[in-house]
Image 1 (cartoon, one colour):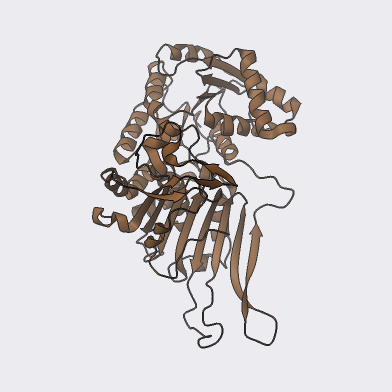
Image 2 (spheres, one colour):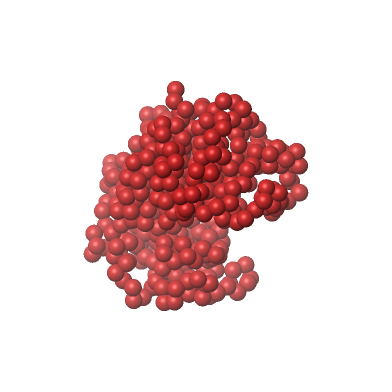
Length: 495
């Protein structure tokens, strides 16, 4: 077994961008929770790299504040002290070659367990990926091949061509088994439970096809704006930031065939087959399959907020989309003719992620010419956040003499009342430490996802004159409803 295979623990966990937004909000709290659960290997050191000039004591104060802001009084002092002892902080500019020999020296000593594998977590802007990759190679971290692990955050490229270029750069220095392309939505327990929900329940899987399903909706909504991310977001937009990766990954999990096993490549093989089966969108049909808009001023949770054009750092008259909705078809035996509607946006009515599956009406309208002539269709819904649960909606007769119906909801909560939710990054970081790639993305997944959305991006790049708007606090622009195939289809906003 090589040092990088599942089960081999790393000696060092190196975080590039340790003082940045992602590390502060997600990585450091998740690592602390893993410490509290006793899942971090005893000898593993954590090396935090950042531009801020912290002394060791200053970094520990920063770390303490991060944990307090996240967990408040729930921070366990003994666990926090053990966690803090793992850290070394290094200040420097990752863009300068002189930084890397110092890094090399810092991780040159093996841990007390004898391990000498290093995890490099690139919690940095995508524009710096190549710089870090090349400098790691220059000081010898790419040798011997297969030894160390490198974690790359999305977005993986800005289009198909740049994604391919980045992949070539990675493979020049690292083997595929060393590369962990992370999508935190795949770490959400409800997404993983979707595999169990589909493939472990005889009453569900027979319905999961074009014979019974009318359409599928996937929604990832945020009530937050862009915050301090204008420099990144105004060059990216909702299509690149969310739909091409997060929502497309959710689509593949919903639509995939049963894998031969739960091994990483078996699962990813089936996801790639879905992407390869997606119907290409010709340039002439882009506007019939995709819609974009930008938030204007409005009200969120009773408070007025500015429009995207007035956010700090946003270029004036930009047509960067903060809301995108799109319709896709999967031309295979299971899904031919079933539309998949995806939408995501910022400054929407609430922060909520869900998958909503509408079933077809019964083939024989038994209740024609009765008060039940228009019976609501059945739905299967899965909420990913803020709660974790699955729900089936059925029509049942109301008590009494008349023939009336009402909706009954069969709820399958994922966790019991005393079971705390787990941050998706906890599962993914633990998998990186253990060398398990099941929940990470293989490059052909990235490549085929870009092939699906590239026609939309290229068409929009030429349409710089106008963009629809929607008031902050709404569910997006009403014009997005034009994507629906039938008049009786509409966005499912509430679960």
